[in-house]
Length: 431
Image 1 (tube, rainbow, N blue to C red):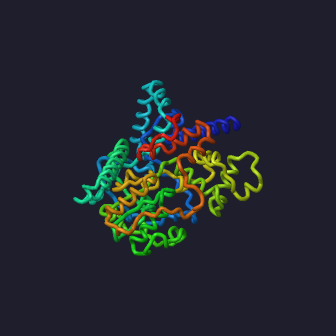
Image 2 (image 1 turned 135 degrees about the vertical axis):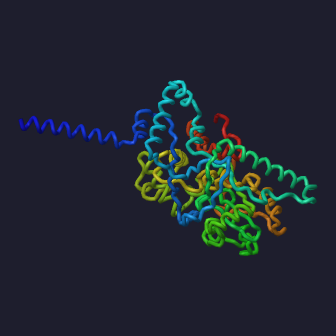
Image 3 (image 1 turned 90 degrees about the vertical axis):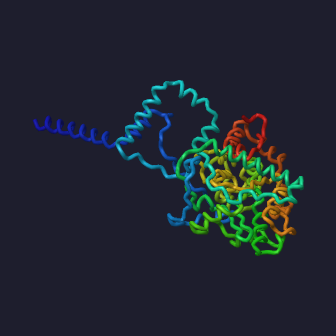
């Protein structure tokens, strides 16, 4: 009799525990497990912060109080990819989420089939939505004076700027939403400030950033000539102010009244330039931090010396790391997307220059802001000066080492930069 009672008690206790477990389980999690491939109305996940070096033209993001944020509302804006997801806490919202999934299931396999055939890069865009510009400068692009309007060269460069900005805005506007927008110190942490000529410059590594910092230092009166400024002084001297160093009012005021500019470069060419600089020359940061991790993960039968030093990373191994969703070490500013570095759909840049036309674009910008006439953009290469610059031909030689699939995935990885800044496909077999 005792055994029967004990057995019955155990069964009842187990059943009660199961009921409590089911009651406490989040219905959204249950639905997610039962219906893979269904998209939910959830907030975006906050991306992991990139691995930032102490020796690579970067610095760690300074912490700011919660009120140190410039907040604006605009009708044609997007969700920030950095927004922290909000849990669905009420029963009504959970039920509506379940009903949403049930309706999607009723549409049958036809919708799922369409989703499966969507191009991979469109999936990437949806997972990492673009941000729409929200703070046009009062100045916008400075207008040409009467004398410049008669100069065919200035007129042509001015029209090119209008076209670049138009393409950038049209690309951004395809991914808009009607939600509240914020600019945090994170979004402006790569923007340098020059107060005398009221310039904001977003640093894009491997796109002339060292020489642009020299120009800003001369404009600010910190040096008389760009030739007098050494590489280490440019990147480690901390002479230039960053926008995230200002308070809420300072950030907002400068974003809305200063001339904001960035210079970009063909994505594949920029990537090869970064690889050559960081992995084909001695480097006491990138070799031990990135090189060791890459060799350990992607090289079969790696030697003890390679595993110890991290030197000798091959371009194909580097691409394997770049395309790996489970990278052994985080991203770096030298090969990150311009969309993440400068947020061009969140911050409305007034001037968009290109590395490929650097001399014309840079000197035109200096002319527009009224810089001294004797100040021109420097042409010299201060790192590995005896080595040929990374060109289209050199870039194609490196990418020839990859399989067609790896080239396509690399293009997909930088697809938004190609689209936003109107760069052509670097290989004919890409789609």
